[in-house]
Image (cartoon, rainbow, N blue to C red; front, top):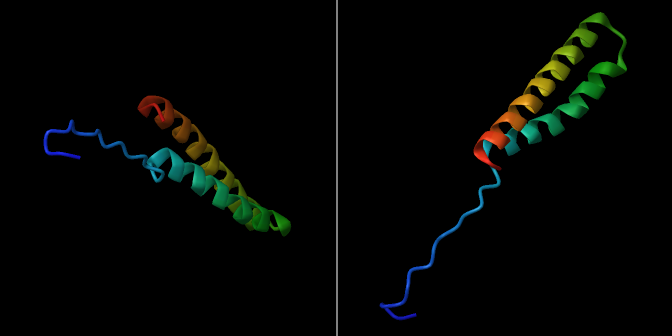
Length: 71
């Protein structure tokens, strides 16, 4: 290309944006949730409930940010 050629627009695709990282964290929380639910102990059930609640919150936040940022 010569010096007088029109400049090409640089387009980059960012895979590791916040909504995608939130989705990845939710995927990674599934095995933790399963292991916690294997033993019927009240403390583990509480921990599993907390993991589930955090995953639910990230699901909402992921959807909100994805819609807001158009991703």
